[in-house]
Image 1 (cartoon, rainbow, N blue to C red):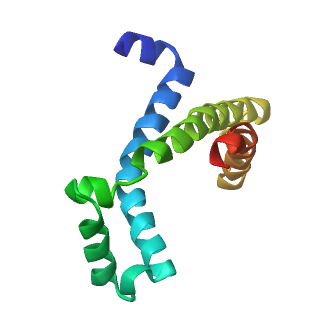
Image 2 (tube, rainbow, N blue to C red):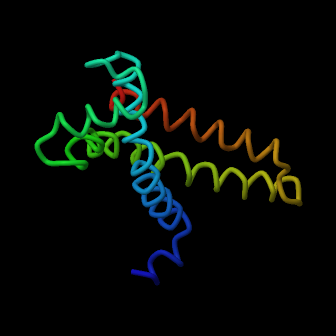
Amino acid sequence: MSIYLTNDPAMSHMTSASLGEAIACLVCVPTEVIKAKMQTNAAGTSNLSAAISTVRAESGSGVFGGLYRGYGITLMREIPFAFIQFPIYERLKVEWGRYQKREVSPVQAAACGSFGGAIAAAVTTPLDV
């Protein structure tokens, strides 16, 4: 597998982006669950500790059932987006750098990322709705 990833930069970028999203969601999902509880003031969750206690008490399967509720569906949304965005971003940076015969500036890299993100959003929006 490592030979396959090193010979194909796009596959390497897609794999890295997917793994990065899966790990990032380990932090983002519980944060979103607690934020949603606090925003709706569910069961008197006016402070952080009350929100965490409510989430833990709701699920019969402990922390993973409460704080990580929605982890799978979040991955189903985030991974396709990253899978599309990062190879486009990396390829655009390479091509733009070749065109101008030097590395892209941070502003140009941001433009490449914005373009890649716009394409990924257009393709994956039905997954997010």
